[in-house]
Length: 367
Picture 1 (cartoon, rainbow, N blue to C red):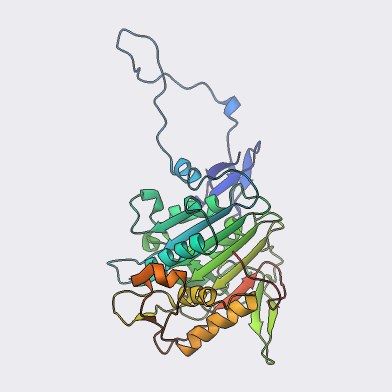
Picture 2 (cartoon, rainbow, N blue to C red; picture 1 turned 90 degrees about the horizontal axis):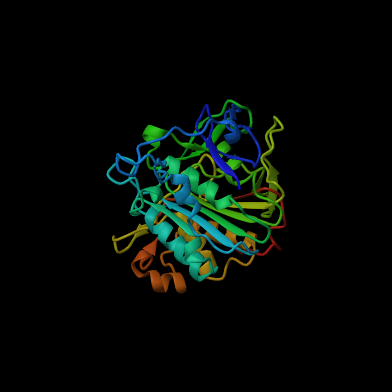
């Protein structure tokens, strides 16, 4: 059983292997040491539960922990072929950063995973401002813990999904592992006070631990999201109109791959671009342009291979199609998608990155 401890320097949650007494943080490189429970003195007696005439003392019940709550999310039998997902939609309501379509994105993605790809609802962790559980509000801490939950205990045959719809940004990189000199970042609900989640941490948390036989897909609908997972390979279209892989491995030699598993990410735009909401003809609701095009490609049968998916998504956004078409998602989500259209003038191009290159024209897409 892995134990979660906070880094002594940057407070990033870390997974302490069984029997280990120290661990080095992948983000700040600080070493956190944990005392051996066997060397600790016995606990001091606390206030008794019995009457004052009794001398039987008992420790108070432990306070509930966010770690305990997260470990109970989506528990399914430990068999091969499990499916787990973290879906995060942040609207930043009543702030100058407010977005209109992100929570709709989260609802649409959840419906898609359950009804199209047979993800158990109990294995999907939703983080939105609409949640009543305080541990499901998309704060920086909760998103971090949700990412740990997603990969914890994964084994060969498992399929994992991480979806984020919200603000993305960039900050100056000082370690030399970014070609453009900037780290990409996700903005949690409390980013103005708690800071952003940097791509280095995302890579260390949900990319590097993925073991052989496990597949993780990330769908990131945010600005500056092209390389949000810091994956080493980026799919580009060459002058002949064919997709080719660019090697974006850090010049420093820093490892950005997995522990043998496969990670593939679809993102809303290139690192230097912004993502947009769709406009709604009914003026009632909207969705993110990237999530819209992702779902539409699947519902219209355009997602046979990864190349088909990428082409369909890019075509949808370029042509600004004015209808969302038929399909299970449209028919049952009703107001979430009915009448939706893409607004004109979008300047974004969905991106595909991966832990290892593959033939996008023959590899079949599935979640």
